[in-house]
Image 1 (spheres, rainbow, N blue to C red):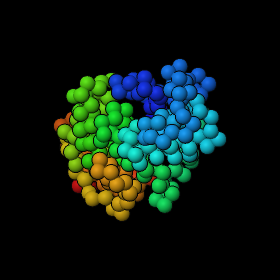
Image 2 (image 1 turned 60 degrees about the horizontal axis):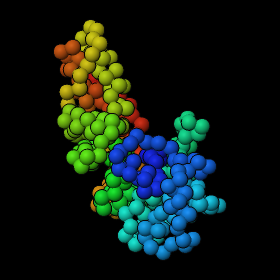
Image 3 (image 1 turned 180 degrees about the vertical axis):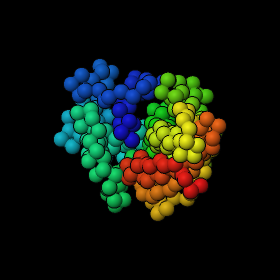
Length: 306
């Protein structure tokens, strides 16, 4: 989800840019907001009551234009009230408030803090109510046709491990592309999901976890080729994938139809990847373990016993 936090959340003019699926960008600095956003925030009543006004106020607080000592908490509260009134942008804002909150990030000074990531992944379900509400809100907004939310939801499926998330990426990106939303990152996601779905339809990994596993799995296949043949090979091609069931599976308790059982918090499974290495069939066992924050840890070894 860290990559999702970088998507621009701005006013109407900026949301139009999101609708065109521009590449992720940082939140605008509070000291230099756009003139359109300044005007929008200045025109809002201090305490809006309608859904659209609440969502726009959440945006003003989140970007820092409207000062708040409780920036992210207040933005979440406003967005949640907007969502309660059926305002799709409220769901989008609710997700952005969660994703951009430093308490939910693991990057420090542009670098990944592995201990911070571990702590996020270790959060018990009892402490994830805001995360659940954020993802459910995003799904609601995407389901109502909010274009920025649909792009974010495709990214969410891409990054987050759970069975069938590869297919969800393909379906979501396909819908966006057919509707005219295009960008190199979106098209890249669509291509990667399509290739994985065709080559390894049985995988339970996300697109990101699958791609992370590919290089170590290929290396294990080449090592396996040397063991099996005592020869040398410098290229291995994945031919097929089978998978076990997930042991001790625990999912984030999402309730939206589009996101139910799309976030594996705990669980482990094995996949058996068969490679063609210079004409020799080489089996590799890849063990995936959900890390609690949408990703996996993995181990790939030559499956000598197969």
